[in-house]
Length: 228
Length: 228
Image (cartoon, rainbow over all chains, first blue to last red; front, side, top):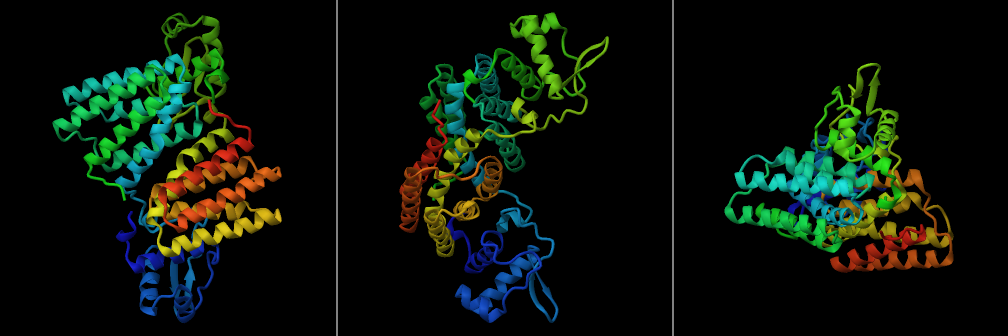
């Protein structure tokens, strides 16, 4: 996540990876330059380079062919944008997902306020109210929460957003249960939801956007995430 | 896109679809209520309902079983968030994609300014400058443009953003070639790119975000898109 979170070796590994996936300097099956040349190019010591290469071997990007040198794996799919995290079975960081929500959902609420049909607005409000009841009763609201946000995404009439939302939520649901761990969080969640619904009902796009942003910031602070 | 862009019949079709995909009122293989009941529930005429059902049959959501009634298709995958557009082979609207860029890329630039390693920043600036040259020479810059924006996405250190970017660009490249159709657009593009690079180099996150937003707004205006 933060720059400080990565070691020099990891940075070098990411750099070599980017030479393959972004720069297309090496293709699947290609031989890498020898150690001296590559270390010089990357301006790192040979020890650091060797460790970075070891990481990429462990992630199935590179392989050593005995007596011949280091190669980009033959079967590497170059149409994907890999990062090291992705290569290790892509378990996306929950903070990554919430940053994505923070980017995506306020604007979703904005478009929904402007574009929802009356039926779509009814559906959003129906799930919003249902969710309020579940929060108050402290019952599981995972599915209703998802329906609420999906109904908003659908009301944007933007097919890409409508498609993206379930991908995001499936990843989030895998990671972390919705948790209002204390009374303050319960109060914030209820308050934010009420505001989102009121602004949407009034078709106030800026209001809906801002209330949604607040809602996600509250959730992020609940997880202890801070901006960096 | 805009609410005005859909007919009542399409709204009703979307509404029935949402009863299946969001409300989970009907599952794959379920029989729908009879025409009178459903028309009453949806508060539309039977003629409108019949046309909406016809659309959903054409999109393989519903099927008529002779003498028995209307059914949700047995093999409908309910884990996806369908919209009518998606069902017709999902050719996403280019405006949908640019709205998504407008949401996503300014914040990407913001995080990149804060989090890029020096190597990552170098890579961004390298592609930015290369793209400038191609624009001036009026040569095809599709690949370099994508590398520029992908390098920014990678520098966010957010794996979800890194993954999302190529999906977005592949969809855009299918649809529309990059086009600076007149001198004004060329000037804007060069100017925006220069600003993005300067702010990133200065690690000015708010500046990079705002310049990227301007860049995408310019492109949208070039396509003739207006906010709604």
